[in-house]
Length: 510
Image 1 (cartoon, helix red, strand yellow):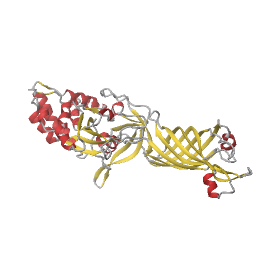
Image 2 (cartoon, rainbow, N blue to C red):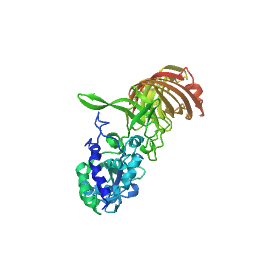
Image 3 (cartoon, rainbow, N blue to C red):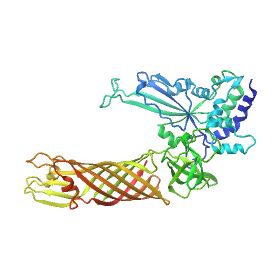
Image 4 (cartoon, rainbow, N blue to C red):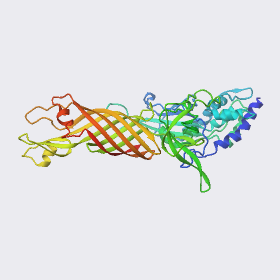
């Protein structure tokens, strides 16, 4: 019997679970972002598919490189989902035991080997762990780190079934593709002190100990992967601020860090006699991301850099907490020559750079042409109206008026400065669309082939990380390739539509 390994397991059980039990509920509560110490989590994924479901139709679960993978021997199960007891099925599979078999895969010399625990502990170790270990007579205990990781073992259970009609047939969309119903449930290995002590004392030295021991799993929540990233504390990467000029932290590729990822800067403060975490600022990742995919060595020179997005000054020792977001924003705006909405999405290729799609309605002059081809104008939405004396004004507006719309795409670059200000510059282009017949009653319809290019600038006041008010200015130029040069005669004619517009808007980020 390997007494050294057994002693190691018993010695590590208690201190490891002081960390594990800091927070019984792993869902993040407001003010508790720093309550549970961060360790690299691991993840298993299993699929429950309906009895007539084709597994090829299932969308595989995305798993970030932030996680170690606990690969189970079998991860696809087919059953009658309409009548099955999912919880009973999960219990019968003894998923906790299967996960523990990943951590302790081999029994040798009278005890389970700790190779996986040590390897993952070594990989999960930060430079701070190594530095502290060098300063200690005991060195860095990777096994202890590995033990802490076991309690961060999660399982995603996904179910898939076809949507059925009243006759039991599979519902399909307009393209003939089957409509699929899917749900995701998150569970966690409940490796508490009682469970761990029982395992190390009763089963660690038995060849079938992992199979015989009781390893319960705890239901966390139902949702999707984005929900888990937002609400489960162990899914949020944490790192200590090591420098402020620039802002740097020891976090990088092995945590799945990407350009422009958002991190909240948190610090512990006293409130009503208790310590709670409070957000001081929000930062985003620059282009310099540390390649920490190898094991830590204690060398702190390769650090990920951040830029301040909004908030107070960032100080060394504060904690960065990953804040998952969808990455897109919606910006309604109104200008002197147009009003519309812009939707932008962060590219994650360059800090602050986003692609945008835009829809707007030009505002200038309404052109009215009477039956004698006389032209008159009045302020309003850019349009061409053909006046028919035999019809009412409402009928003329509805039937004889051509309205114009624009839709386009482009790039916009945002810069953040001071505490809560931003400046943005963008370029783009698109197409002009219209409603109604552009020709007269006695001539064939003229084809509208008009395009535009634009440049825009913004100055924003950020009221929160997700909301800002801004002033905006833009310049637009049109080109035509149709039967009539509408660009020259209408869109670039300042008598009808000003190329320069100024205005205001609001930006809501998700």
